[in-house]
Image 1 (cartoon, rainbow, N blue to C red):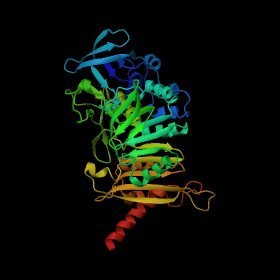
Image 2: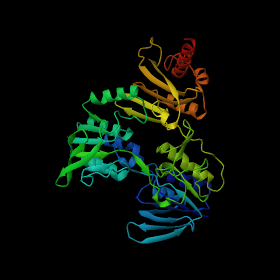
Image 3: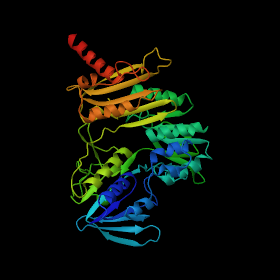
Length: 451
């Protein structure tokens, strides 16, 4: 059987590894635009900040490894056309210009995503960079060295990590986003307020609630960012305004969400039985909202790619969905979230309530007992847990993995309140913080019914 894999970052790498080990007799050909595979773009800010010295260490596989496992690696090949009716594809060798024609029995679409590039005046100027792949990482490092004023546009995780890294090197940093607060997709306001204070206390300028309208420059390089509320001098701009799925090759040939994300079933099959998809190129089943959503995360990609490998010949291991669980460290703050925020829930048609607990993570009689802020979001009608967030100077982020399991299994407040967690004064209190939050929410509900 001939298998064509289009794209080989996280999902593609995982699929190839699984397939070559489980089915060594398959004829697998990988088409990849770049000359590398498996780059962890989430580590770019760590590289920029000097935590990771060499960007090369952000690769966890290589073309040579996949070739040794039995895959034919066609690097620097750009797939131009896919004909799903005749099961053929056309690619261009970017090194030689040669056109390559191929066929397949099964197609694995793991083309990932690409940064959103706004069509604004001046976008073509030099010193405006993206933040996605290995080449971007190298360009950012090189150009940031000579820049004194750096502007980051887009206040998601990548943007937040970059502004911290640039500030640590003494740069004059401006952080711009059209939303009125940072990280609004992951955290509710009581959490983002804490993080914004940490950034502004260190001199980072937050220019929120404003939209970039143009870039101005001199001698071909950017010198100003123009928004609907002001103009900001800059030597370098990093665009982090989000990602969109790279699925144009299959547009109109398989089912997709309006944004182009490919819809897959629990076995990673598309609406065409011979085409599978995984990673940032497709939608995932979002358990809190019980619907498909676009949630580009490396964790989703690796899981889904592995499942493609397990299900390509025979459906056997189903995908359990995602909660979009993620974590972040900024300065001395440890931050994580899972599932829906209270602000986002209404967009998915959910009526929710929440409880926020601020308490020491372990008994106050211990030498130190840092405070932790924990929020749990739950469905009003059923008390089903649908989201959670945590922030503290002590690392309590693993509790979001615990609540991810709770959401995946449709746990309610009543169940969470009495889950068996250990107690040891070095680590927690007799009532674990998660138990406390659920009990507090139930207590508040009871009090309201008695009024």
